[in-house]
Length: 481
Image (tube, rainbow, N blue to C red; front, side, top):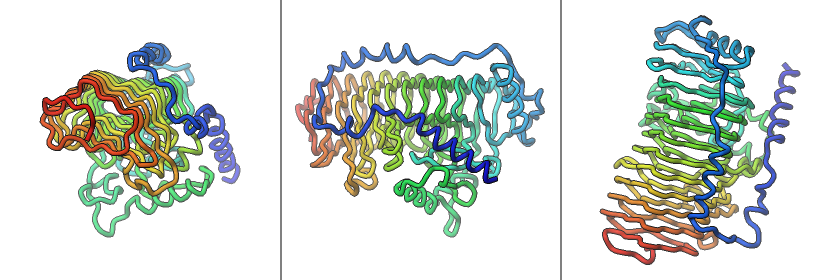
C-alpha cells in the first residue's frame, strides 16, 4: 500500500508540473500597461478560422466492440460496469475503435476511457449510472469546483488520454434526484433535511487545503465527504469529442473537460435541473468548439472556468480560444458565462448565432468574479445573439459575486464586445459592476436592441466604454446608467 501511495503521489505531482503552461504568468496578466492595443472586432473574428483549423475530431479505427459480448445485460438492473471495462480494454489493446452500447438499458458504475476509444451510445440505448457512491471508487485525481483533489470518479472519466469520444444518439442518465446525490448540496429543495449530511464541511476543508498549498495527493475525499462527482470529465486529455448524446440527472456539472486541448462538444442535448447542474464547463482548456447544443439546466448553461482561488493561481492555466456557436439555452443561471472559478484567466472567447430564452434564465451573457478569484479575463466577443427573455439582465459583469471585495486579488475584465444582439424582455439591459480600484475596461456594444426593459441598466466603474447604435425600449442611448 505504501508503494502504491508513493507511486500515485509521484504521478500526480509529476503530471501536474509537466502540464503547466508557463506563458500565462501574473506578470503577463498584470503588467505595467493595463490596456494593451486593441484590435477591432472584425480583426478579432478573423482569428476564428485559424482556431478552427486546429480543432479536429479524433479518428477511430473501424472496429466495434459490443458491450453485450463482454457480459453487459439489458434491462437496467444488472451491473454491467465490468463488462464495459473489459470492452474498453479489448478495444484499446486492439488499437482502438468503438465500444458500442446497443439499444436497451444498461446499468453501470464509473466508466474510464482509454486512448483511441469511442464510447458509442446507440440510438435507443440508455446508460443508467448507479446511485451507489461506492460504485465510483477507488478515488481518482479530479478537480472539484476548480480545486484539485482525490475524489469519487466522475461517471465517465479519462486521465491523460488521447483521442477519446462519447458519441451516439442515446441517453446518459445520471439518476440524480432528491434522494440520490442532490441532497448532498445541503438545500431542502433538493431533498436535504435538517440533520442530514452535506458537502459544506468538506468544501470548506478543501478550500483551506488549497490556500495552505497542501499537495494534491494529500487532499483525500470521497466517502464521508459528500462532494458530488461530475458526469463527464476528461482530465489532461488531447483530442476529445462529445457528440450527439442526451444527458440528464447529473449529480453536478455535466461536461467538464479540464486541462485539455482540442475539444469538441457538438449536438449534445442536456436537460437536468439539479444543484450545480452546469451544462458544459471547459476548465483551463485550449482550442474548444461548442456547437449545435441544447442546454436546459439547473445552473449555468455554459460556464468557462480556469481554477478557483489559490489552486487556479498555482496552475495558472487559462481557458483560451473557445468558440461557441449555434447553441440554444433555456433555463439556467447564466447562458454563456465566464467564471466564477476563473483565477487562471480566460482569453479569446467567440460566441455567435446563439438563442437564449426563458423566464427562468437569469442572465444571457454573464461574467462573475471577485477579489478572491482575481484573474485576467480578456477578448470576449459575442455577435448575432438572440435573447427572447431573461429574468435579470441580458449582459451581466459582476465583481461582487460571492466574496466580492473581500480578497487581495484584482479581477480584470477588458475588451468585452457585443454586436448585433436583440433582446425581447428583461429586468435590466445591463448589470455591469466593477470596483473603483478595478474598473471594467473596454465594454463595447454595437447594433444592440433591448426591448421591454423594466429598469434600464446598472453600470458602475467602467472605463473605455463605447456604444454604437444601441437602443433600449426604442430609444438610442449614448451612455449606460
